[in-house]
Amino acid sequence: MKLQIEEIENLEETEILIRCREVKKKINKISNYIRTSYITINGKIDGESYVINLDDIYYFETVENRVFAYVEKNVYEVGYKLQELVELLKRTTFIQTARTIILNINKIEKVSTLVNGRIGAVLVNGEKMIITRVYAPNFKKKLNE
Image (cartoon, rainbow, N blue to C red; front, top):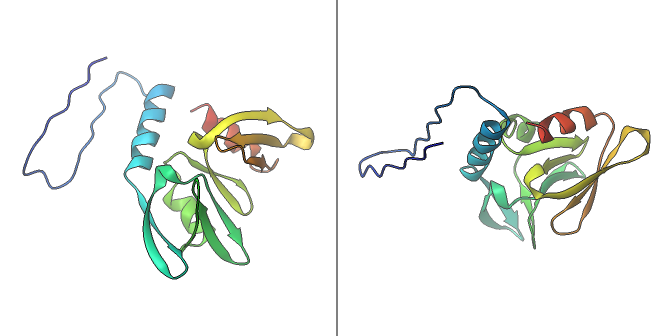
């Protein structure tokens, strides 16, 4: 594999080009990681607005019709509906794992099979999540990409 980086002063937007014989699992992981790294989400805490890097977010959760982004030490309210985020993030490292949760698979430390087709996931911060049986097949597929 060759890696080449060019600095071009008058370039308006960063462009990343991957040339490969065949798109395989590793290429998909790299492209998903790159997409995740370049997206930011606006969030609020106590009325103050913040810009959050997508790769810092562990998961999104809907609580009482409000959507929150959970990062290592804070919880931000975001101005999206969960379904809007599902669409926006479908080609990133995020996947819906329950009716009210979208999870960043890069923040998973380990997974285990549970009863009734559910999957347990432990995040790198020690938090435990459940992937419901409805979303388990897509979750497994995303992990194997």
